[in-house]
Length: 110
Image 1 (spheres, one colour):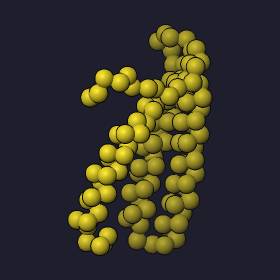
Image 2 (tube, rainbow, N blue to C red; image 1 turned 30 degrees about the vertical axis):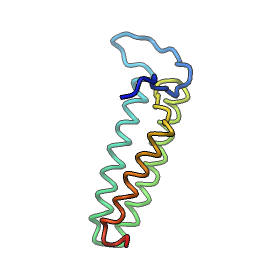
Image 3 (tube, rainbow, N blue to C red; image 1 turned 120 degrees about the vertical axis):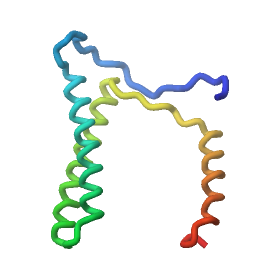
């Protein structure tokens, strides 16, 4: 790892009570985790649906769930309860070059 400090991207944190009771942050975090789990499950269900009508119904529910997940993420980020690492341009370029080389190994990319 290089000597540069990792840069967090985060908004100022909205204060919530820190005690044994669940607070707003805890509830939103729980809902976000649930929505992430549900989108994974719906994705699997879509991949395995043998009937087009069932696939379309699950796809519709998946899209609603995905939108809800994004809204939960945005709420957490806005309130400073969710942070992400700022992308390092050099690391991104290295990863891009590394994985671009893998294309030649895939039969459908040639």
